Amino acid sequence: MTVFEATCTAPVNIAVVKYWGKRDTSLILPTNSSLSVTLSQDQLHSKTTIRASADFTSDRLWLNGIEESIEKNKRLVACLRETRALRAQIEEKDASLPKLASLKIHICSENNFPTAAGLASSASGYACLVYTLSQLFQLPLDASDLSIVARQGSGSACRSLFGGFVAWEMGEKADGSDSKAVQIAPETHWPDLQAMICVVSDEKKGTSSTEGMQLTVKTSALLQHRIKEVVPKRMEEMIAAIRNKDFPKFAELTMQDSNQFHAVCLDTYPPIFYMNDISRAIIRIITEYNKDGVKAAYTFDAGPNAVIYAPEKNMAEIYAVLSHFFPGATFDDSLGLLSKTSTLPPL
Ligand code: PMV
Image 1 (tube, helix red, strand yellow):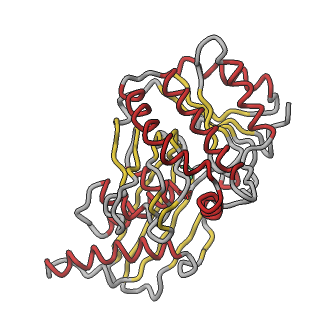
Image 2 (image 1 turned 120 degrees about the vertical axis):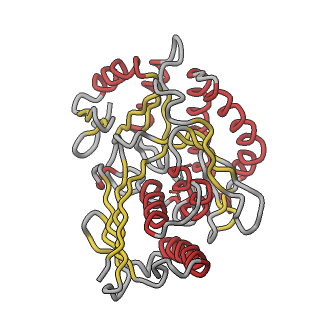
């Protein structure tokens, strides 16, 4: 029996203008546009293999070697439904094509980074799933079209369809057809900009981003200010800083946006805390390090781990500074991962 198969990888992206809040929870339409840097595929990435065969009796999924239920995962089901519908359309137009849309599939996905590290893997995971499905089904779609499907798996996943610097335009339409990712600049634009991931804690976060966002949308007055008065201007300034390779401006905007995102979490009722004492110590260290000129930028997502963006020439010094304050930390140069088996010791 013929087996159809595709394997792809997709990188992680880390936002410098954060997405936080949905205006439509089922289509995953955001309350603001966002912008991220896609890490190099040599750093953190997901790898997915999908097979379709008439021998398979059900759709099945293995994540890092462990089988998980597909049916319970509405978002994964949505990505499958969308891509199968697109495949069915092209099969209808061309009768010579193999009938893949009706076949059951087996999905096998893994991350090249420690799963226990508490690093967001949904962005690379869903981007990889949707891209691999598009390859398997030979869908005639570009990366922006695919980002509309990946967005329905995990919002931030839409930005991992591109390398380099990527904006997720929030769009206006109720059907989400204009809420998509676009590339601001390719990865070759600013090769000097590097990312170091500091694993502060490998514990699973207390409040998921889905839960947290909706609570923020319902209760935070600061979020309303952020989405109306802050983000539109910040998006423009960030795009200009990236185009001009203006690191001090890029860094200032990145740190301000991370700070505001966590302020919005604190303004949520009841409040949400994603950073811990070690995260705040990293902020203090980087602030002190930047005293005579901005040489590094920190950013934190929905967890305590830090990502430090800096020009390549500063990275060794930043590592030395952080190792001084956190002596037990080890650095995996190939992944850009600063970590300790459990947690970095407090100052
Ligand atoms: O895509 P989600 O639901 O995992 O949300 C991601 C939200 C942040 O990581 C905090 C910000 C962002 O823009 O990636």
